[in-house]
Amino acid sequence: MSAEDLDVLKKEFAAEVIGTKEFRGEHTITVSLAALYDVLAYCKNSLGYNFLLDISSLDHFGDDPRFEMVYELATVDDKKHLRVKAPVGEEESVKSAVDLWLAADWHEREAYDMMGINFTGHPNMKRILMWEGYPFFPLRKDFPLAGRPSDMPDVAFTGVAPLEGGPFVTSCGTDDVVRREPRARDQK
Amino acid sequence: METTDTNQTFAAYDSKIEGNVIITKVDAAMNWMRKNSMWPMPMGLACCAIEMMAAACSRFDLSRFGMEVMRFSPRQADVMIVSGTVTYKMALAVKRVWDQMPEPKWCIAMGACASSGGMYRSYAVLQGIDRLIPVDVYISGCPPRPEALIEGLLKLQRKIEGTDAVMEQKKELLEDLA
Picture 1 (cartoon, rainbow over the protein chains, first blue to last red):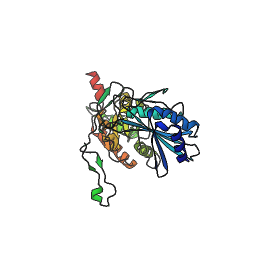
Picture 2 (cartoon, each protein chain N blue to C red; picture 1 turned 180 degrees about the horizontal axis):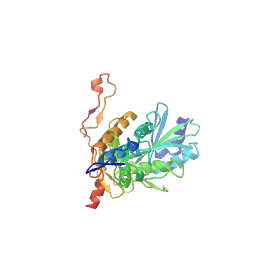
Picture 3 (cartoon, rainbow over the protein chains, first blue to last red; picture 1 turned 135 degrees about the vertical axis):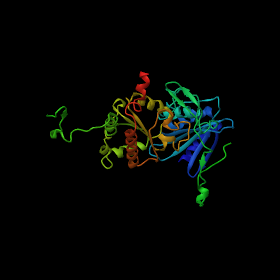
Picture 4 (cartoon, each protein chain N blue to C red; picture 1 turned 45 degrees about the horizontal axis):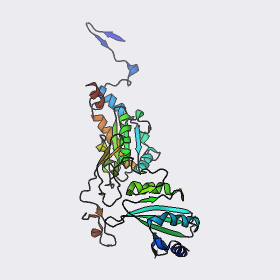
Protein backbone atom coordinates (compact mmCIF):
# COMPACT_ATOMS: atom_id res chain seq x y z
CA MET A 1 0.00 0.00 0.00
CA SER A 2 2.84 2.36 0.77
CA ALA A 3 4.24 1.68 -2.69
CA GLU A 4 0.99 2.96 -4.23
CA ASP A 5 1.21 6.01 -1.98
CA LEU A 6 4.66 6.70 -3.40
CA ASP A 7 3.17 6.76 -6.89
CA VAL A 8 0.39 9.09 -5.76
CA LEU A 9 2.91 11.42 -4.13
CA LYS A 10 5.15 11.36 -7.20
CA LYS A 11 2.20 12.35 -9.36
CA GLU A 12 1.03 15.05 -6.94
CA PHE A 13 4.43 16.64 -6.20
CA ALA A 14 6.25 15.69 -9.39
CA ALA A 15 8.78 18.50 -9.47
CA GLU A 16 9.50 18.47 -5.73
CA VAL A 17 10.25 14.75 -5.38
CA ILE A 18 14.01 14.14 -5.24
CA GLY A 19 13.83 10.36 -5.07
CA THR A 20 12.11 7.28 -3.72
CA LYS A 21 13.53 4.11 -2.29
CA GLU A 22 12.24 0.71 -1.32
CA PHE A 23 14.26 -1.47 1.02
CA ARG A 24 12.91 -4.71 2.50
CA GLY A 25 9.34 -3.49 2.33
CA GLU A 26 10.09 -0.06 3.75
CA HIS A 27 9.28 2.91 1.54
CA THR A 28 11.10 6.21 1.61
CA ILE A 29 10.42 9.39 -0.30
CA THR A 30 12.82 12.32 -0.40
CA VAL A 31 11.32 15.70 -1.21
CA SER A 32 12.64 19.24 -1.35
CA LEU A 33 12.48 21.29 1.83
CA ALA A 34 10.09 23.79 0.24
CA ALA A 35 7.49 21.07 -0.36
CA LEU A 36 8.10 19.13 2.85
CA TYR A 37 5.22 20.56 4.83
CA ASP A 38 2.78 20.18 1.94
CA VAL A 39 3.84 16.57 1.43
CA LEU A 40 3.38 15.82 5.13
CA ALA A 41 -0.01 17.51 5.15
CA TYR A 42 -1.04 15.56 2.06
CA CYS A 43 0.11 12.31 3.66
CA LYS A 44 -1.96 13.02 6.72
CA ASN A 45 -5.10 14.44 5.17
CA SER A 46 -5.39 12.46 1.92
CA LEU A 47 -3.38 9.29 2.43
CA GLY A 48 -4.47 8.57 6.00
CA TYR A 49 -1.11 8.70 7.77
CA ASN A 50 -2.61 9.82 11.06
CA PHE A 51 0.24 8.63 13.28
CA LEU A 52 3.67 10.25 13.53
CA LEU A 53 6.08 7.67 14.90
CA ASP A 54 9.26 9.68 15.04
CA ILE A 55 11.19 12.65 13.74
CA SER A 56 14.93 12.40 13.47
CA SER A 57 17.67 14.30 11.75
CA LEU A 58 20.98 13.44 10.11
CA ASP A 59 24.19 15.41 9.87
CA HIS A 60 26.00 14.79 6.58
CA PHE A 61 28.99 16.82 7.68
CA GLY A 62 30.95 18.10 4.70
CA ASP A 63 28.06 17.74 2.25
CA ASP A 64 25.78 20.47 1.06
CA PRO A 65 22.99 20.64 2.16
CA ARG A 66 24.36 19.53 5.47
CA PHE A 67 21.34 18.19 7.37
CA GLU A 68 18.43 15.93 6.55
CA MET A 69 15.09 15.64 8.31
CA VAL A 70 13.46 12.21 8.60
CA TYR A 71 9.76 11.74 9.38
CA GLU A 72 8.41 8.28 10.14
CA LEU A 73 4.71 8.15 9.32
CA ALA A 74 2.27 5.34 9.98
CA THR A 75 -1.40 4.65 10.34
CA VAL A 76 -2.85 3.89 13.74
CA ASP A 77 -3.94 0.41 12.56
CA ASP A 78 -0.29 -0.18 11.52
CA LYS A 79 -1.25 -1.16 7.97
CA LYS A 80 1.26 1.08 6.24
CA HIS A 81 4.43 2.93 6.98
CA LEU A 82 6.14 5.73 5.09
CA ARG A 83 9.42 7.57 5.60
CA VAL A 84 9.62 11.14 4.37
CA LYS A 85 13.02 12.80 4.08
CA ALA A 86 14.08 16.30 3.18
CA PRO A 87 17.54 17.88 2.92
CA VAL A 88 18.08 20.98 5.06
CA GLY A 89 20.89 23.47 4.54
CA GLU A 90 22.79 24.98 7.44
CA GLU A 91 21.05 28.35 7.16
CA GLU A 92 17.59 26.98 6.35
CA SER A 93 14.77 26.34 8.78
CA VAL A 94 11.99 23.77 8.64
CA LYS A 95 8.29 24.47 8.86
CA SER A 96 7.00 22.86 12.02
CA ALA A 97 4.64 19.89 11.74
CA VAL A 98 3.07 20.44 15.16
CA ASP A 99 -0.22 21.60 13.65
CA LEU A 100 -0.42 18.28 11.76
CA TRP A 101 0.61 15.94 14.56
CA LEU A 102 0.96 17.15 18.15
CA ALA A 103 3.58 14.42 18.58
CA ALA A 104 5.95 16.55 16.53
CA ASP A 105 6.34 19.02 19.40
CA TRP A 106 9.02 17.29 21.48
CA HIS A 107 10.65 15.56 18.51
CA GLU A 108 11.29 18.90 16.84
CA ARG A 109 12.61 20.35 20.07
CA GLU A 110 15.01 17.42 20.30
CA ALA A 111 16.16 17.94 16.71
CA TYR A 112 16.80 21.58 17.57
CA ASP A 113 18.56 20.75 20.84
CA MET A 114 20.87 18.04 19.53
CA MET A 115 21.41 19.11 15.92
CA GLY A 116 20.67 22.82 15.85
CA ILE A 117 18.04 22.71 13.13
CA ASN A 118 15.61 25.60 13.39
CA PHE A 119 11.85 25.24 13.06
CA THR A 120 9.34 27.93 12.19
CA GLY A 121 5.85 27.99 13.62
CA HIS A 122 6.67 25.81 16.60
CA PRO A 123 4.68 26.83 19.70
CA ASN A 124 7.48 26.24 22.23
CA MET A 125 10.84 26.14 20.52
CA LYS A 126 13.45 25.69 23.24
CA ARG A 127 15.92 23.04 24.30
CA ILE A 128 14.47 19.82 25.67
CA LEU A 129 17.42 17.75 26.99
CA MET A 130 20.18 20.27 27.58
CA TRP A 131 19.51 23.46 29.51
CA GLU A 132 18.67 26.84 28.03
CA GLY A 133 21.95 28.62 27.39
CA TYR A 134 24.05 25.53 26.63
CA PRO A 135 26.17 26.82 23.75
CA PHE A 136 26.66 23.68 21.61
CA PHE A 137 24.68 21.17 19.57
CA PRO A 138 26.18 17.90 20.78
CA LEU A 139 25.04 15.44 18.11
CA ARG A 140 26.63 17.37 15.26
CA LYS A 141 29.49 15.56 13.60
CA ASP A 142 31.96 18.34 14.37
CA PHE A 143 31.23 18.13 18.11
CA PRO A 144 33.89 16.00 19.84
CA LEU A 145 32.79 12.81 21.53
CA ALA A 146 34.36 13.85 24.83
CA GLY A 147 32.36 17.07 24.91
CA ARG A 148 33.39 20.68 25.34
CA PRO A 149 33.71 22.75 28.50
CA SER A 150 30.98 25.26 29.23
CA ASP A 151 29.72 27.02 32.30
CA MET A 152 26.47 28.71 33.24
CA PRO A 153 26.76 29.78 36.88
CA ASP A 154 23.99 28.36 39.09
CA VAL A 155 22.52 26.38 36.19
CA ALA A 156 24.98 23.78 34.97
CA PHE A 157 28.50 23.27 33.72
CA THR A 158 30.12 20.72 31.44
CA GLY A 159 33.64 19.38 31.16
CA VAL A 160 35.68 17.23 28.84
CA ALA A 161 35.48 13.50 29.51
CA PRO A 162 38.79 11.63 29.61
CA LEU A 163 38.74 9.15 26.75
CA GLU A 164 42.11 7.56 27.59
CA GLY A 165 42.79 6.66 23.98
CA GLY A 166 39.21 5.64 23.33
CA PRO A 167 36.50 5.32 22.17
CA PHE A 168 36.88 1.58 22.58
CA VAL A 169 35.06 -0.21 19.82
CA THR A 170 34.51 -3.92 19.44
CA SER A 171 34.94 -5.73 16.13
CA CYS A 172 31.69 -7.47 15.35
CA GLY A 173 31.51 -10.68 13.40
CA THR A 174 34.86 -12.09 14.43
CA ASP A 175 34.96 -15.42 16.22
CA ASP A 176 38.31 -14.67 17.82
CA VAL A 177 37.68 -13.47 21.37
CA VAL A 178 40.96 -11.55 21.44
CA ARG A 179 40.14 -9.62 18.29
CA ARG A 180 36.57 -9.00 19.48
CA GLU A 181 37.84 -7.27 22.60
CA PRO A 182 36.99 -3.53 22.52
CA ARG A 183 40.01 -1.52 21.39
CA ALA A 184 40.81 2.09 20.70
CA ARG A 185 40.43 3.11 17.09
CA ASP A 186 42.14 6.09 15.54
CA GLN A 187 40.03 9.21 15.81
CA LYS A 188 40.34 11.52 12.85
CA MET B 1 26.32 4.49 100.63
CA GLU B 2 29.65 5.55 101.96
CA THR B 3 32.13 3.85 104.15
CA THR B 4 34.44 5.86 106.27
CA ASP B 5 37.99 4.84 106.64
CA THR B 6 40.20 6.32 109.22
CA ASN B 7 41.19 9.34 107.14
CA GLN B 8 39.64 8.86 103.65
CA THR B 9 36.14 8.66 102.12
CA PHE B 10 35.46 6.23 99.28
CA ALA B 11 32.43 5.91 97.08
CA ALA B 12 31.48 2.32 97.48
CA TYR B 13 30.51 0.10 94.61
CA ASP B 14 26.72 0.10 94.23
CA SER B 15 25.45 -3.29 93.17
CA LYS B 16 22.10 -1.80 92.10
CA ILE B 17 23.61 0.03 89.14
CA GLU B 18 26.00 -2.69 88.18
CA GLY B 19 26.06 -3.09 84.39
CA ASN B 20 24.47 0.30 83.71
CA VAL B 21 27.65 2.31 83.80
CA ILE B 22 30.10 2.41 80.94
CA ILE B 23 33.33 4.26 81.17
CA THR B 24 34.46 5.53 77.79
CA LYS B 25 35.78 8.52 75.89
CA VAL B 26 33.38 11.14 74.53
CA ASP B 27 34.75 10.58 71.04
CA ALA B 28 34.12 6.87 71.21
CA ALA B 29 30.60 7.31 72.58
CA MET B 30 29.62 9.86 69.91
CA ASN B 31 31.12 7.78 67.13
CA TRP B 32 29.32 4.70 68.40
CA MET B 33 26.01 6.52 68.26
CA ARG B 34 26.70 8.10 64.89
CA LYS B 35 27.82 4.93 63.17
CA ASN B 36 24.87 2.89 64.36
CA SER B 37 22.21 5.35 63.27
CA MET B 38 23.34 6.53 59.87
CA TRP B 39 20.30 7.82 58.03
CA PRO B 40 20.84 7.69 54.29
CA MET B 41 19.83 10.35 51.81
CA PRO B 42 19.00 8.26 48.75
CA MET B 43 20.25 10.11 45.68
CA GLY B 44 18.88 7.54 43.27
CA LEU B 45 19.67 8.61 39.73
CA ALA B 46 19.81 5.39 37.70
CA CYS B 47 19.76 1.61 37.92
CA CYS B 48 22.00 1.53 41.03
CA ALA B 49 19.03 2.99 42.89
CA ILE B 50 17.13 -0.25 42.32
CA GLU B 51 19.90 -2.16 44.10
CA MET B 52 19.86 0.43 46.87
CA MET B 53 16.11 -0.14 47.31
CA ALA B 54 16.73 -3.88 47.38
CA ALA B 55 19.34 -3.35 50.09
CA ALA B 56 16.75 -1.53 52.19
CA CYS B 57 14.10 -4.20 51.68
CA SER B 58 13.52 -7.31 53.75
CA ARG B 59 15.85 -9.71 51.96
CA PHE B 60 18.97 -7.67 52.69
CA ASP B 61 17.51 -5.40 55.38
CA LEU B 62 19.75 -2.42 56.03
CA SER B 63 17.91 -1.85 59.32
CA ARG B 64 20.11 -4.56 60.83
CA PHE B 65 22.81 -1.87 60.86
CA GLY B 66 20.61 1.11 61.77
CA MET B 67 20.52 2.53 58.24
CA GLU B 68 17.01 1.79 57.12
CA VAL B 69 15.61 5.26 57.71
CA MET B 70 15.84 6.64 54.19
CA ARG B 71 15.35 10.37 54.57
CA PHE B 72 14.11 12.26 51.56
CA SER B 73 14.85 15.52 53.30
CA PRO B 74 18.57 16.26 53.31
CA ARG B 75 18.20 18.08 56.61
CA GLN B 76 17.50 14.81 58.38
CA ALA B 77 20.13 12.71 56.65
CA ASP B 78 23.68 11.70 57.59
CA VAL B 79 25.00 9.85 54.57
CA MET B 80 24.24 10.58 50.95
CA ILE B 81 24.26 7.51 48.73
CA VAL B 82 24.84 8.76 45.20
CA SER B 83 23.59 5.80 43.23
CA GLY B 84 23.58 6.28 39.50
CA THR B 85 24.72 8.40 36.60
CA VAL B 86 25.22 12.04 37.53
CA THR B 87 24.54 14.13 34.45
CA TYR B 88 25.76 17.69 34.25
CA LYS B 89 22.13 18.76 34.29
CA MET B 90 21.66 17.03 37.66
CA ALA B 91 25.10 17.76 39.12
CA LEU B 92 24.37 21.11 40.75
CA ALA B 93 21.10 19.77 42.18
CA VAL B 94 23.08 16.98 43.88
CA LYS B 95 25.51 19.56 45.20
CA ARG B 96 22.64 21.67 46.51
CA VAL B 97 21.17 18.70 48.35
CA TRP B 98 24.60 17.91 49.79
CA ASP B 99 25.04 21.50 50.99
CA GLN B 100 21.74 21.27 52.86
CA MET B 101 22.76 18.21 54.85
CA PRO B 102 23.86 19.03 58.41
CA GLU B 103 27.25 17.92 59.64
CA PRO B 104 28.52 15.35 60.34
CA LYS B 105 27.80 14.01 56.88
CA TRP B 106 29.30 11.40 54.64
CA CYS B 107 29.01 10.48 50.99
CA ILE B 108 29.04 7.12 49.28
CA ALA B 109 29.62 6.91 45.53
CA MET B 110 27.72 3.78 44.60
CA GLY B 111 28.60 2.12 41.32
CA ALA B 112 30.85 2.91 38.39
CA CYS B 113 28.93 5.96 37.15
CA ALA B 114 28.88 7.85 40.44
CA SER B 115 32.53 6.97 41.06
CA SER B 116 34.01 7.82 37.68
CA GLY B 117 31.34 8.42 35.06
CA GLY B 118 31.40 4.71 34.28
CA MET B 119 30.84 3.82 30.67
CA TYR B 120 29.54 7.31 29.93
CA ARG B 121 32.60 9.06 28.53
CA SER B 122 30.29 11.68 27.18
CA TYR B 123 29.49 15.37 26.90
CA ALA B 124 26.51 14.94 29.20
CA VAL B 125 27.85 13.04 32.23
CA LEU B 126 29.87 14.28 35.19
CA GLN B 127 33.00 12.11 35.39
CA GLY B 128 32.60 11.13 39.04
CA ILE B 129 30.68 12.83 41.84
CA ASP B 130 33.98 13.43 43.68
CA ARG B 131 34.53 16.37 41.32
CA LEU B 132 31.81 18.18 43.25
CA ILE B 133 31.57 16.73 46.75
CA PRO B 134 34.00 14.78 48.95
CA VAL B 135 33.40 11.03 48.79
CA ASP B 136 34.15 8.70 51.73
CA VAL B 137 33.48 5.31 50.19
CA TYR B 138 33.50 4.21 46.55
CA ILE B 139 31.61 1.03 45.67
CA SER B 140 32.57 -0.75 42.47
CA GLY B 141 30.05 -2.56 40.33
CA CYS B 142 27.63 -1.86 37.51
CA PRO B 143 25.40 -1.93 39.43
CA PRO B 144 26.83 -3.24 42.72
CA ARG B 145 24.80 -5.92 44.45
CA PRO B 146 23.05 -4.99 47.70
CA GLU B 147 25.73 -6.91 49.61
CA ALA B 148 28.31 -4.55 48.13
CA LEU B 149 26.35 -1.53 49.32
CA ILE B 150 26.08 -3.04 52.79
CA GLU B 151 29.82 -3.71 52.72
CA GLY B 152 30.39 -0.08 51.75
CA LEU B 153 28.22 1.15 54.61
CA LEU B 154 30.08 -1.12 57.04
CA LYS B 155 33.36 0.30 55.70
CA LEU B 156 31.96 3.75 56.44
CA GLN B 157 31.13 2.61 59.98
CA ARG B 158 34.76 1.54 60.42
CA LYS B 159 35.84 4.94 59.14
CA ILE B 160 33.57 6.79 61.56
CA GLU B 161 34.89 4.70 64.45
CA GLY B 162 38.42 5.76 63.74
CA THR B 163 37.96 9.50 63.32
CA ASP B 164 37.75 12.35 65.78
CA ALA B 165 34.11 13.11 66.57
CA VAL B 166 34.49 16.88 66.35
CA MET B 167 37.75 17.82 64.65
CA GLU B 168 37.31 15.50 61.69
CA GLN B 169 33.54 15.23 61.41
CA LYS B 170 32.56 18.87 61.89
CA LYS B 171 34.95 20.48 59.44
CA GLU B 172 32.51 22.99 58.00
CA LEU B 173 31.45 24.10 61.47
CA LEU B 174 35.07 24.62 62.50
CA GLU B 175 35.74 26.56 59.31
CA ASP B 176 32.78 28.82 60.08
CA LEU B 177 34.01 29.41 63.62
CA ALA B 178 37.57 30.16 62.55
